[in-house]
Amino acid sequence: MNNKLYGNLIFELSKEGRRSYSLPKNDVGDYDLPQSLCRQTDAALPECDELTIVRHYTNHSANNFGVNNGFYPLGSCTMKYNPCINEEIAAMPAFTNLHPLQPKPTVTGAKAVCTLLEQLLCKLTGLHAFTLKPFAGAHGELTGLMVIRGYHESRHDEKRTKVIIPDSAHGTNPASAAVCGLEVIEVQSRSDGTVDVDHLKAILNEQGEEVAAMMMTNPNTLGLFEKSIPEIAELIHEHGGLMYYDGANLNPMLGACRPGDMGFDVMHINLHKTFATPHGGGGPGAGPVGVRKGLEAFFPMVSPYEGNFAVLIKACAYILSLGKEHVKEVGPLATLNANYIKERLKDLYLLPIPGLCKHEFVFDGLADKSTGVTTMDVAKRLLDYGYHAPTIYFPLLFHESLMIEPPENESKETMDSFIAIMRQIAHEASEQPDLVKNAPHHTPIGRVDDVLAAKHPVVTYRQLLNDKD
Image 1: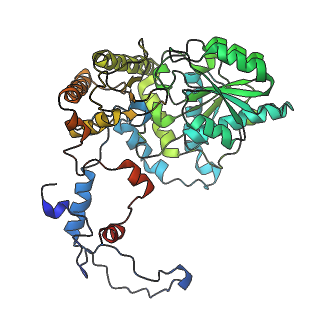
Image 2: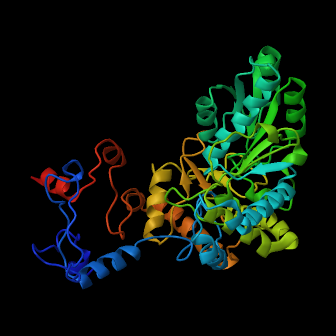
Image 3: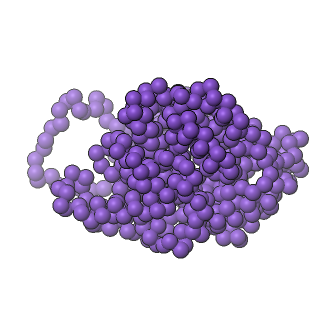
């Protein structure tokens, strides 16, 4: 900020003894807290006047970046389209004033909304039943795997303790399997980025009787549709395993096909990725789990309540506002937008796997790597132009992965502006590489040392002062 006063930290504006509030005289008496709960010294809080504090938080809020003030190329993975009407409905007192421990007769309306959402999700996915209790996608994965494990144990098939996961999978897949006490078997990808069915057959021939399930994302993390799903599902089922669908990439499937129709037995949905509720910053989320008929008996008790209720309300409102006609447009439009950006940039950025993508695609950095400009440099330079960076260095199949995922609701003009900036950065990388390598130049702070920040984070102002001393 140009104004030095409001560019300072709130601690630097602090003056001992200054107050920003005035409370009425206490006329109810004093009540001492137990000494065990009291601080030994006063909290080192800033002491400022009211306007300084208001301006401090107002100026900070202007530094936040989200879908309401800019294009977010992380798309459905982080910043999903979130119409304000959904927020208004979720904020209705009839919902916000509820308590999870209220008597059941007093929450019949909320229960009806949850039941309606379960029915809508069944129709959209082709599955038989859903539970809304999981609080996030990873929580949903764990819940789904618990369903699978419970199913096998009910058949006294305890030897099925292994889960097959593609090498391109989201990191939560193997993590969830491990938490559920299952062992991971990695299946390789082919040169076209899809699952190597021959390698899968070899795994099944050797360890098929121990396989509990196969976890898959479709389209996969490269944004590619797994065309061999029917064959894969048949192979897994023949060997007694179940198919698990990671719903992280459900966005482009809406209106095109349903996981249940492909042969999947269990799935979770990231409501915050596919049905509104941006979750940038780590939350909130919701991970309902759906199953084919017969598996609903194995839903575990992962929570005494429905998941994040406001997220459930917003998802239900979003689906109803689109209706059965317009919900079919989500997937095709997300796919159209991603392919448009990909085709406009593939001459300057390296596209390792050509062809039609779905809602996202992955470049392997710049096509011209002669100047040493990396994907990290490109991401940092985007900040100078007012764009949030896309996902970088994931998936791990490529050294310089740069994943771009435009939501389905962005206009052509917005995408053209983003494309123009990406092309500008590519030209800068070739003609002025140091400009890109030292970016960002116009943000409140310059480039930080990521490794140092991770290993030795400075999290308080007092620590910062001590470090300077």
